[in-house]
Image 1 (cartoon, rainbow, N blue to C red):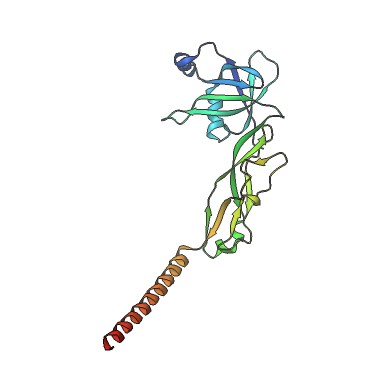
Image 2 (image 1 turned 90 degrees about the vertical axis):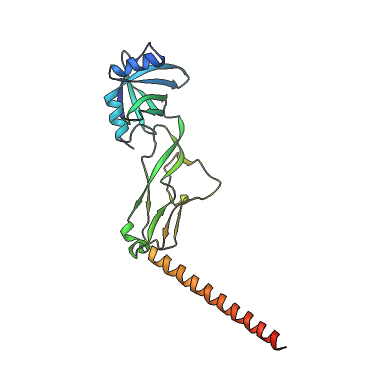
Length: 225
């Protein structure tokens, strides 16, 4: 699992556009806390903490905790929606969901490929054609996989990697279960593909030439008759 960020949190009285702007000017990110059988609460998080987690890729689909001022202990949360500034590329609003060990959510887990140097297809110049860079799964909110790793050792040109190649941790299930969809393929080198295409074109041209010759011969025979 990834590192768990802990965000300092305070409730906020002012909501709406004006309240959100005032919150940001004071160095906070406006947010809403919901779920867990409790009513939604308008809160604010320290901007530096949120931005650091976001830039490190740990905001969405990663377990975090909030430290609420005046309350004992910390609450486990998951960021379910993040609004980003169009120019600064930093979070300007966050929706947080309360979670516990019983909470299951759908999340997108990135895929990483291992041992590319041990793939015969890649060693001879083939290309790892990634069809899906991430996989959608249902996972316990407190045990979300950080990444799925796929070993390409021994794979040759033309081989296909399906989602069934991923070993899912206990409690984690695929969102799509009606088909064994493709994650990646080992594609032929471009030079080899070009050579194959040229050979096919030459074969087709030869066949066309033979058909034309046969047609000419038939025409000549008809004239003689």
